[in-house]
Length: 436
Image (cartoon, rainbow, N blue to C red; front, side, top):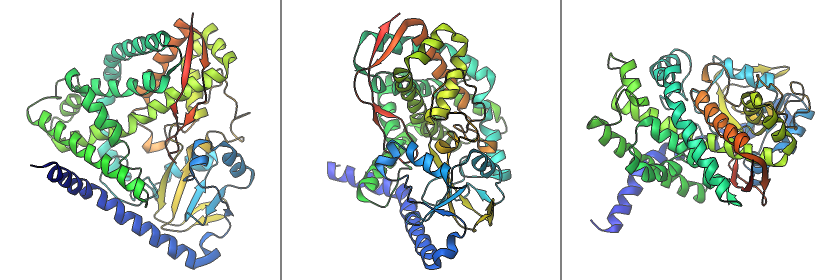
């Protein structure tokens, strides 16, 4: 088989995954046209805004935009994007629970598409899917992962200490979650490098937008998803990855009636990669940026290590690794005096909600001793993130190692932030740790 044949096969295979997204893009464009034809009747009562989460500059630094949203009403509408926006903490939480009127069944991104996955279902179907995967995240499972989390944190912080001026995103924030996910899935050490390459590409599968660059990126992501599926199916068919100490093995044991097929197991693994990889990387990178810019807060945590769990929760509120997700109304949905019509695209801004001045005093300040227990960084209600306990353990372990081994976190250059409209975190962050 020639190289051309190989590429052609990859393109054809990738297109089978990308095609629903392209069709969805067309549907979204059509919806936008219909909304514009309705004119002002389409968004009566909403505050018209030019806030555009797809603008790369805004995506990288969204907080000025959030302050403007908070200053003028509860419901906003961007005609250019045909998108309703909820930014108030109470409104976002309410929308996450009112699944009879606004839900995930048509997707959680700008592009409508439906899949029978735990993320894109609601009601009884969602409950059943969640029940299936719950055995992977029991307290017993978390306890079994803790030694590996602690070992990784110790090694990675030591590596950053030994390499002053290094990019902490590449040295620590990226390796920590992907190595941990490989561990809990049971991926053998010999396969971790290629597993990481596929995973880092696959997480962009939902970054679709109707332009050539995004389509190319999504096609590469789809090819990586295909490679991951081939790898997992080969392993699962031969009995690999199903031992009692892996997440997939626990799912098999917890569904003894055979409710979990190999394809279900792969879908769970893919969900874990997409939901638990870049989000945790963003949390860890954001934590270094925050503590480097607020040395007095790092000193406070060093003096009172009991603050570590609370400091991680405050970091989740402050940097919010997933800035927003979307829902679609399946009935007219009322917020205050505004009725969002059936079939509308609604952006739930977690980042703005976590900086709502009606809920948090001085919301643009990081306070390690604040207890922001109501934050929505992990969602809320039925769709509360299943992997939240794992992300918390990883961040707490890294912060614990920093507190014990470093006296100062110095930023050695400018932080470069991602321009993804939903997933926000540092992509380049040179730091120097002063040994304790």
